[in-house]
Image (spheres, rainbow, N blue to C red):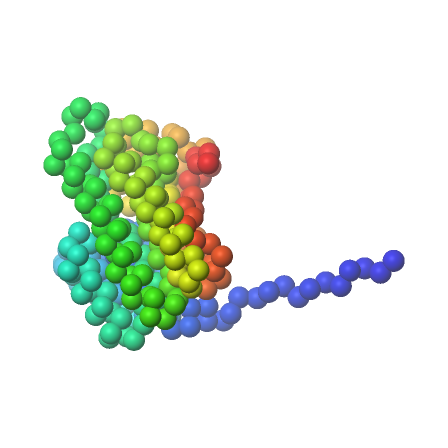
Amino acid sequence: MTEPTSKKARTEPENLFDDQVAVVTGGADGIGKGIAAMLARERVHVFIFDVIEAKLEATIAEFGRCGLTNVKSRRVDVTDENAVREGLEYVDSTLGRLDIVINCAGIVGPNGIKLTEVETKDFDRVMEVNCTGSFLITKHSVRLMQKRNYGRVLLFASIAGKEGNAGMAAYSTSKAAVIGLAKAIGKEFAETGITVNAVAPAVIRTAMVEGMKPEQVKYMTDKIPMKRCGTIEEICSLVRFIVSPLSSFNTGVCFDLTGGRATY
């Protein structure tokens, strides 16, 4: 009896991203900043979009000191359709392509309080940034990506969008909407080379989380079987795969990064 012939393991290309162009919203801080740095190290030409110009300038300067000179910035409010469209068109026309768009821009909004204490204007603002912002970024990214029939769009949702976090009604609702958006648009463009996915992390230690009420952070961390927060490095590891050419058969999917919390 002969042994089956072993196949040589598939190896990853040396330059996985092949000088691709990426936009990372909310890229001046937190998760977005970490992802922008990761892509820049992969020789991707990165544009970070953010609304706070001072943070944009500081981040670009910091990246420059680290030798990441392939990162540029532009002030863009993801809730402003004209700004989103013009920003993405500028990147596409300046660099000649748009391969990857990752929407990290988002806000927590009211937390640590019950629904009856949430002001309607605060609920609306969370939905505007997290949900409408995701819609606008995806709409105008896909429109440009269609020209080359290739692209990777990744939206940031949250485990709160799947399971709901008490004390965070507005945030949980907005992130559930982001998951639905990614699933719908992923199906709409499934026969193209464009994929649209979401990632749903549990609590990740960022400046945004540091600004939340301690009891709210404890509530979320206690639900994680690993009993710890995730890290930006762990986020980057998953994102790298999702937005790469290797992830060609994944679309309309919500990837979990929850330390065992996710149950479906």
